[in-house]
Image 1: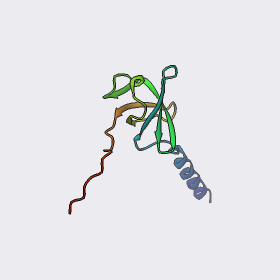
Image 2 (image 1 turned 45 degrees about the vertical axis):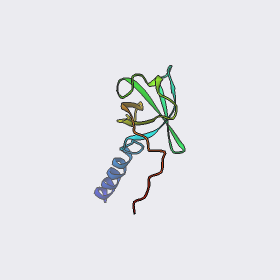
Image 3 (image 1 turned 90 degrees about the horizontal axis):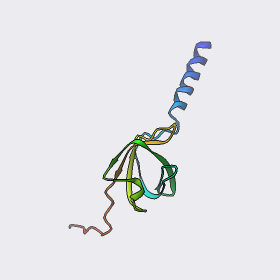
Image 4 (image 1 turned 135 degrees about the vertical axis):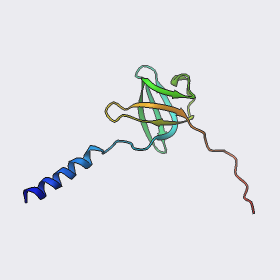
Length: 104
């Protein structure tokens, strides 16, 4: 009985370790950037996520996060769960606004 209980408890704790950590990159539109706290706010649909930009954050296609336009599409990779610091921020290609013609 003790072995069964310990296995169940072990599985419960193992599952909670990964709770809340994003396994996928964050894709969204820039809402704002706070220069004092170096926090980038990105909208993902109706939700907003705040990510810290650190000195080791790799910028792809971006000179400085403060120069990002509001509404620009970005992809954020490797967001650390403890301090929410991104390892890589890149400009993402947006979807075209024009409608595609159907071939047919």
